[in-house]
Length: 308
Image (cartoon, rainbow, N blue to C red; front, side, top):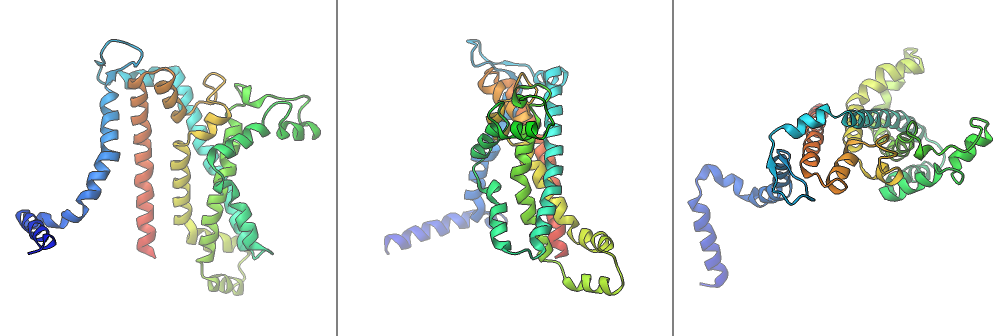
């Protein structure tokens, strides 16, 4: 008997020792092990750390405080500002990206000349690395050197240069604009594929019945695309709420906390304040929100798959 045959026999004997009802899970055991090691274990570790007062700069051992870190987050007025910034960041950025992306996808579907070239150009913001795109917008919004200030000044909308990235009232909006610029092409591509998958005979029949363009859009286009639009919107929310680079590169969450979002606050708590307990609690809050969005994303995706 060769070595390969003996190894195969040993493997068969090991498999035969496993109860028959559990053997179906054997092929996915390595995958489950990797998921547990790289996904479930970090989540469990973060949940465990969120129950301790753990300061990396302190010589004292971590102290168990239970849910006190979560109470601190709830009662801290700074955290309320951060959560409000995150809400604006996610909702405004996602909704504007959807509207602009839908219009871009519709224009690409309208059989414009050089549509393939236009599609490639439209996807450039999404293809660019995040840090590169954020750096471009940071330069564009800079004070006397930024093109945005120059355009507004030449148009007579402002009387002098405005340091938007250094203003507590305006610092959040330049990263939102940069995020819209990055995400709109993704939704444009989703819209374009949705248009291409629709039946043209529906529009021909509607035109024969005298339906106006608005009625065609309301009764044919939107119902046919509703699930794709919902999936795209949830993808925008999931991407936006965990995005870190755009805000960090452009403003670093400042001045103060005027443009700080939840991911930036987690980074600051962990690597600036070295408060691992608060950072872990904030991470669990972010994880819970992402879990809700992911649930509805999977639910809509399954519904679309079932209808198709």
